[in-house]
Amino acid sequence: MTDEPLEADVLHPRGRNRARGMLRDRIAMQRWVLLACAAVAAGALYAGTAPVLYVIGGFAIVAGAALLAPARKPLIARRLRRKRAVSAWPETAMKHLADAFPNPCFIVDHRGVTRYANTAARIRFGQVRPGDPISFRLRSPALLEALERVIGGDVAQRIEWSEKSPAEQWLEAVIAPVTPAPTAGSTEVEQASASGQQFILVTIQDQTGQRRLERMRADFVANASHELRTPLASLTGFVETLLGPARDDPVAREKFLQIMMQQGERMRRLIDDLLSLSRVELKAHVQPETTLDLVPLVRHTCDALKPVADEVGVAIKLTLPEKPAVVRGDRDELIEVLENLIENSLKYGASGKLIEIGLSWADLDRPQAEPRPPGQWVLSIRDHGPGIAPEHLPRLTERFYRVDVAASREMKGTGLGLAIVKHILTRHRARLEIESRLGEGANFLVKIPAAISDAEPAVDR
Image (cartoon, rainbow, N blue to C red; front, side, top):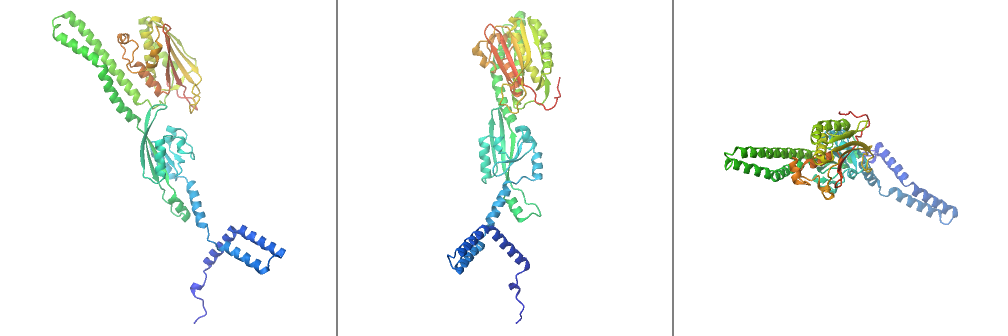
């Protein structure tokens, strides 16, 4: 037999240090219990109400129970990991990946709080502050319900929804869970936190163009088939007459050929306006980014239409501001708006012999807009013709709506001019207001927000 102790009986120095550390932790955790027991024991000894052995024995029992009770460290560790998981942020690589997406992309945590938004998301939905719930920017109930399902453990979700303001648009969202891998060299607690942390990737795709293209095809077929039926019937009738009874009648042939030419021109104008309306509707949800000055635009359009005004004997009076009227807009589309409105006044208000066109500044009458533009420019086109009955005003921007069908066709109108104007102004976040009374002419008001810029804009003249 040897007097050397067995290896199992020897406490390794590392084990002794760990035991001492655990004991110190237990004493620190139970310090208030131990101090209370010591105070009670000291009071009992001082008062002499109990034997010394009883007091010491009771203190030892309470102190042993406090020090030897099952530790709550695993629970504390779990809570610590959960707290760290809540406050975790996406890694830099995940942020770079989100920025590479061309579509708006949000990274949210398991509480639905935004942790990161890529550049496309900030442009599309405004400045998104990390730490805010995603519902601050995306308020679709269908999307929020799908997000809750993914947070609850469901697989990736794909949902669609539509929005009506500021323009009708359709959006599609893909909501997928993403669990980041633990990094090399991380501690056990950090690895557990990384494995338990789950981010949710929300990507948004705009389906408006595709939906509008489908609607445009259907509307074009419906409108073309309806409006082209009359001139086609006229052309067919005249051709049959020329092939039959008027075959050898040069006077009738000349007359019918002129009418056929007019009907062909009418069909050409109708198709051009339908195509123009379809193009505008296709991008009505995309606001132009270019800034331009309305003053030279209005002056240029009036100069282009002056021969038409001289032909019908109407004078054009211009009232324009001295400073630039800078707005965000598409030059060609705004010229189309001006031409349509001025031509309408020349056609239907020629009896007044005067058209007044003015451009003025006005405070914004939509204070709830965000971000709030500094104000708006109001373009007024007023004629002194017969005016429009009040029952017609709400329907003037409908397709093919005419106050007087015969007069409209005599003026070579298609009934689509004001519909085109309305859709162009919707794209520019502007609106059209019509004021008129019978016998007092009509006033068309175009209200378009001024351009917002932190610096002097590059004006397209």
